[in-house]
Length: 253
Ligand SMILES: C[S@@+](CC[C@H](N)C(=O)[O-])C[C@H]1O[C@@H](n2cnc3c(N)ncnc32)[C@H](O)[C@@H]1O
Image 1: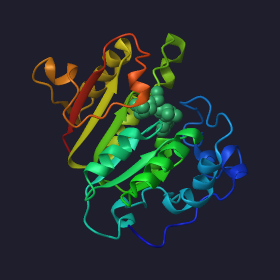
Image 2: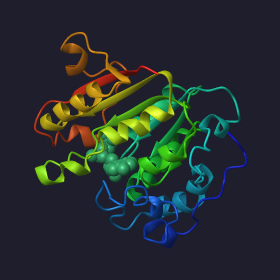
Image 3: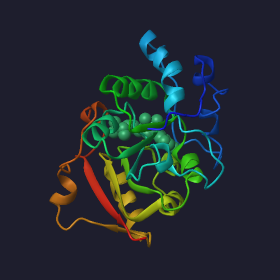
Image 4: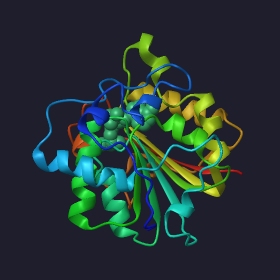
């Protein structure tokens, strides 16, 4: 991974609130937040230390629109770049990055506690193939150059179960347009949820989009966890109203 990591926010004060230059971009694009709290309970000393020491070294600096080539973050080697959107506490991201040390991972998550937890995982595993952005995935997508992402994970995104909140769901046609712009030819996208009406809505939005094709051939393809899936503690709580579904989509270029 590159030695000259850009410096990110340095202090807890900067990291926890409106002054956070990274989280501060989260409302930017559409002026609408898709997530709730971006910070929670006080953090342990270890997490505080990782936030001030490690996060700045792993933070993807804010780039002008279309200027970010994530492969350049990984020592300029030709790597596959995988993006995990809303990684939560980061168990899936850390597990994937551990299993595929030759692949570059970028994780984006606005919630400070989640970012602190993924730093614990990255530090414990000694991973050098993950970069992070604390903030809104839509802002990061705008910064990415076209065609630079090989795979995207969107796992158990916030369900917003009340009908009046459905407009806050991440999977919307405009979001898929954003995603399509940054995907490489033959890229793949995995979406999972355990909320039945989000599963139905997301499937419609993806399959109505001209540039995505659902890969499933049989019910087992979306009902059974894919062989490379790593359940998180959040998933294991089973907070939804149905069994998890896993939709893999091919990007049609
Ligand atoms: C329900 S949690 C699931 C976390 C994780 N994917 C898992 O399966 O354990 C959804 C996560 O998405 C994050 N999130 C919500 N809106 C987001 C956005 N616009 N960009 C990036 N992450 C977002 C939330 O902060 C939250 O951590």
